[in-house]
Length: 108
Image 1 (cartoon, rainbow, N blue to C red):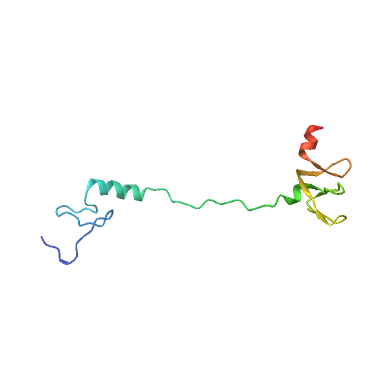
Image 2: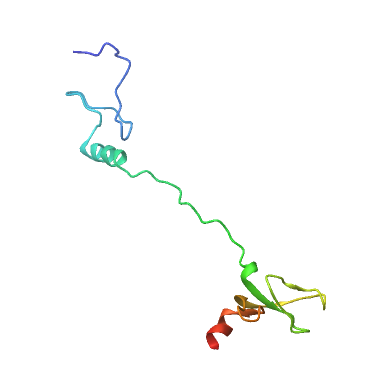
């Protein structure tokens, strides 16, 4: 029995090709049937959440090459008006309050 809409040809949902005549179907071949199933059952792709950027400067110990002054989180020596060199990550010593690096604490 011919279709009432003779100008409309059904197409394969996987590849877009013409469907063969006969029984009603949505794909043209077994390969397209498998492809359509795989497309329907693919996990939804999501963009991974990246951690926010954090500055490590506030946890870094710097030392002035001219006068030997140490500061935590500041790269500029106000006394000598020069930039300090980076010693490494650290913090303030709990006993004296002076900036010390973690390496110095582990060596002690």
